[in-house]
Image (cartoon, rainbow, N blue to C red):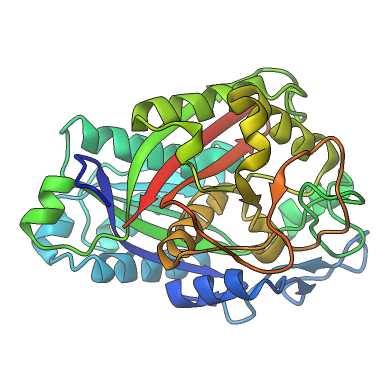
Length: 364
């Protein structure tokens, strides 16, 4: 990749039902086998649906977050002094309890004080990444640690089940005909972002660069996206403009697509609005079909697998595919991973309330 004054990703770690660690995530998304199984963590006998993508040996969320942060910092080769001046941005479910969790995590991992907490539903983690990149790009800090976590638990599971959002056939089928909804999944991840200068001075490894980011709302409905995808289209456009790239240079989109009818069709409409006919020529898949929907942590888990897959030169399949849907005229990756044609990829996320984010990365 050509030298850029971008924001570098120098360390990652992640946990999901695909396994523990970056290597397990890459192997899992490229194997293309969904990780959904009957839930053993709590009783689902009163629920319509009884499966999720859980890692049976996962510990308590604070412990898993601490392990993720320490592992990402170790992968980035950060010493104690470098950690001590790196702020923490944490995305997690739990509302009022998240700021205290963020403080405990920062203190326990030797990071700078005054961490930020993000609880903006399914764009929490991607918003944190965008904020971290902006802080670094402005020169406010040299590096930031972003962490995010959600482990499937009974309360949110019950809410999604009662709202008939969970797929009754036990599979997530993004952009496909016959899709029936989403399934929840464990996700804990941490990422170290640094300025290009700071990373270069200490000889840090570079996995990728965060080249662009965009955020936009549509305000259409509390729970349903704008059918025309106007908010997400603006976020995509902002990310490309910030990166100075054309749509033709994007080689992959890891879509928000949850396997729900309204959401997937709106995302396809957003890409058509942003890119016109070219939207149907960009390879796309949603890795939620493999590791499930990790709610507040989705944006970071999906960014990690996007970076790892594009860096490896292979693009994950869109699992659960049954057949084309005329509302989603996209180049969906089916059957087997596809070679990456360019190093540039978008990771998209959307949330209840009409919030949308786009993160544009370039693999090293």
